[in-house]
Length: 167
Image (cartoon, rainbow, N blue to C red; front, side, top):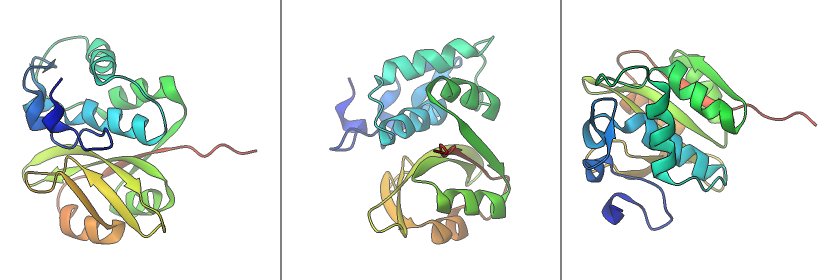
């Protein structure tokens, strides 16, 4: 297992170390941000699913092994096996949903590339932990609004967050 790609607390923080793991007809270092974000979100929710199982589960949903980003519908389909998740599209709706969630997945454009990353609210509630963002930003913290202002300026934005259970 590529220990270097993990944080000390078990999250995948750098997909660059997962070149040996095929995903959608490519390698996970180049094309694995979707399954990596799903693994980290499940971990943040207390679910200890081996990364190989998350990778195989998402790979199994794709009808063909063609390189490309993970479609939102595929990611949501996989996550639906673990609970109920909401999708919010657009900067304003996505920011609002992310700021209200304990954890989630953000799909945005990191430079010229569509990218999925997980986010986890930190103690105190104003600061979030963002994983696997970019080289040099593998494990960073920031207020959600600042992250959006710095990283979500161009291209489409979508956020997947757990649906809160009503008692």
